[in-house]
Length: 172
Image 1 (cartoon, rainbow, N blue to C red):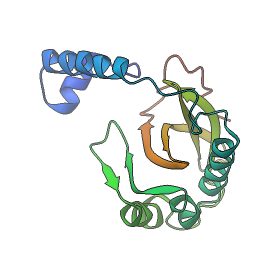
Image 2: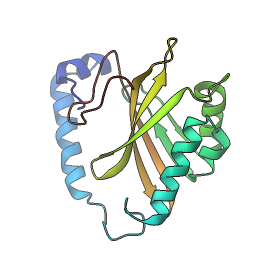
Image 3: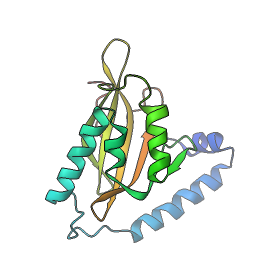
């Protein structure tokens, strides 16, 4: 997944290569069973979704935790692979944004660039470094349900990871 070798994932998770391969195969079967309804109002081309994603980008780039949380379902989930972290529910996610991600003066610290992943809206996230340059930090994949963001899977870039298949620049 995302350019990692099965052995690397197995070492990270302290499990066997066979267990990793088995999990990937089960995930592929599950993903084949899930085909988003392209005619639903939550499709990426709907006016409502375009507006939601625009507000998401604006709030993220302004480090506006309250604005971001307002776009989430009450039971929203955020994960950050490969770290074993996840936060569920608006209150918990707001706490994470305010005390961890956007602590201090975070306005202008992030830039998001729209892309797609597995048919879902996604963003490459760039973090401003000490020189003022924006460096690739993550690939966010969103799930939208009933006009709200239900899930954010924030795949963190480790080192100079570039997310094969997405053709993302390492910096802006």
